[in-house]
Amino acid sequence: MASPWEVYLLSDATGETAESMVQAALSQFRDRPAILRRFSNVRSKNQVYEILDRALSSQSLVVFTLVNSELAQLVYEECDALGLACHDLLTPLLRRLAEQVGHSPEEMPGLLRGMDEEYFRRIDAVEFTVKHDDGQECRNLHKADIVLAGVSRSSKTPVSIYLAHRGWKVANVPIVAGIDPPLELLKLDPKRVAGLIIDPQRLLEMRAARLVNMGQSPKTEYADYERIEEEIRAAKKLFRRQRWAIIDVSTKAIEETANEILQKLKLNRA
Image (cartoon, rainbow, N blue to C red):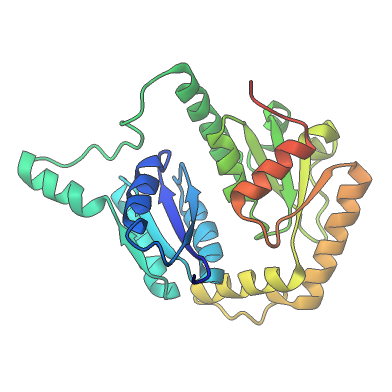
């Protein structure tokens, strides 16, 4: 049997519909097993960039169900620029339905789900997490269930959103070489903070790909191997000094990283 390949599923809701459809299609290709990577509540450009950077490393097929037409177009254009195969499950159907009923779709994610208490708890968590992405609103870090710290491109945003979908209010803060972390972060209970680290070579590849995708030269300090090594050494030193849990994301899928964070921070939902 052939080795597994990967399919990245992007959704601005739970992604359950996309996963079910892809699994149904894959049942016709039993000799080519696939690993499904589901990313729920994709609502921002930054999330799209982070996820597609990961998909690029394995040349995965990208399948998406995004009711927001602007975000769906972004995924299509980014995949085209990166040379990634992609398939939009929702937009063609929405267009056909709009033609049939005579008006545009509402473009409101998650209408299929019931409005129960658990659902609203997750929505609150996602809203909090989006507002506290990449060091925003540091004054509210004490309100987060989980705080992630790490250098640029260490998967802070996609991991945060994944945890938010599971009901955790997450904030993430970038660790920048030569700049002191915010005091609000350093004062937190260390049992609520996880530091993300990554292999320097892996990080170099991700940063270089990001710069090329943005039309910039990859030959900058941002993508310099020695500088990256120093960034990671400094981050590890900070994490140990603060007694934060340390998670290596180098070879882990988003869900694996999230589960390890919950285990190390000893968090669970009843």
